[in-house]
Amino acid sequence: MIKYMVIGDPIAHSRSPGMQNAAFEFHGLGSPYGIRHVRPDELGGFIEFARANLKGVNLTVPHKAAVIPYLDTVDPAAEAAGSVNTLIIENGRIHGASTDGYGLEHALLENFSRPLAGAGVTFIGAGGAAHATAFHLAALGVKAIRIANRTVAKADEIAEKLRLHPALFVETARPDDSATLARWFADTDFLIQATSLGLKAGDPAPFDLALLKPELKLCIFDTIYKPTPLLAKARELRLPVADGAAMLIHQGAKSFELWTGLSAPLDAMRRGFLEAQPC
Ligand code: ATR
Image (cartoon, rainbow, N blue to C red; front, side, top):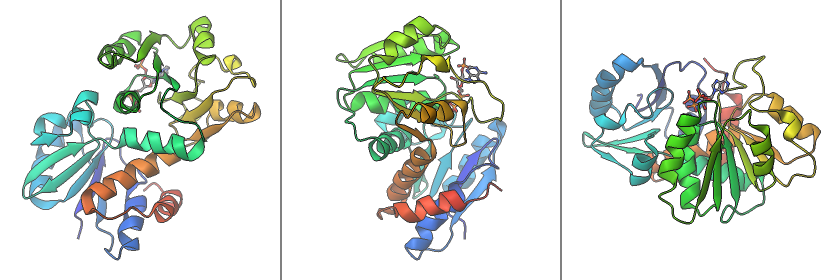
């Protein structure tokens, strides 16, 4: 019986059912996690269905912000980020949380042996992914967050809220402002590629890749989990690099723990994620 679900529009590409059911099966709990295509105008109806029938929901594009008005309670961190990717449903009440920042944090820790406290972080992109994760990194005590986005106003919007962290240094720019990016990269420990570029074959690079030099000390994390020009260039230069799979696995692991109180079997979830064929 389906008691958990991932929803989005589109949703067919999601590997969450394979990953989450691997975790439930590991604990002998069957395969209770399903998938549903929910369009924006269907969200309210779906939430009422979930309230009566489900124990947990994961949300992806375009629902992470839109769902907030429907919830009974929201984690303060998710509220600050304006982004919810996990619903926990108990006795007809719905609580919203965001596990994306936790996912990015643990993906960085797993892939790069470098502390986050005091680190310089540069985001390329200011959409949902950057919004959901930047606040989590700020709360962990990174020293600087710089955001480059094609639409600078969206980067400025995140920056304004991040400046509520008094010790955090915050800057914004356009990704084609190569002089600024070169200056940032010299002071960057973690470069987070958080645009949607790379999802489609033939997508251009999110900034001039000639700015990447082998002597830079940055670790590169692409939130996309397909081969991208950025990942290829980073590997060619032998810079430390990782793709978005680890972030998805860790955000899913945290959702699983919030729902069940059980420890997430990371190896099983990783296998479930890698083996999952988008349906
Ligand atoms: P997600 O939830 O994956 O972050 P999103 O909220 O739609 O998705 O955000 C997409 C991000 O990719 C944004 O930073 C967007 O830039 P804009 O804010 O300027 O739209 C970026 N992006 C998408 N297509 C792009 C393109 N062709 N060139 C540059 N940036 C692009």
